[in-house]
Length: 120
Image (cartoon, rainbow, N blue to C red; front, side, top):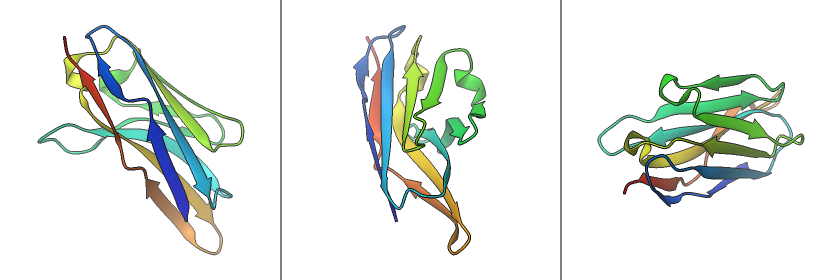
């Protein structure tokens, strides 16, 4: 089992910045990707960004050029630097961890989410 905890959400004005952090603990061997999803009220959960153990990144179209995902070398922490925030970025942000082992196959784990509100 992988325990996932997010931090860093909050209230920020349009044009401002926030940095989200996510930490994975527990059965961390085999983690091969971590990322961020978000869900706004009345909308489906969508990919914000993810990163593989090899450092390959992938971004949702709406955040390209504004958000940057990074990870630590141990692949237990992932960060999301969010710049030029817009009201449309308001959502609950969830950290996602993908882990693969020969014995258990693919496991997907989620954090509880952290609220990001962009408002003046």
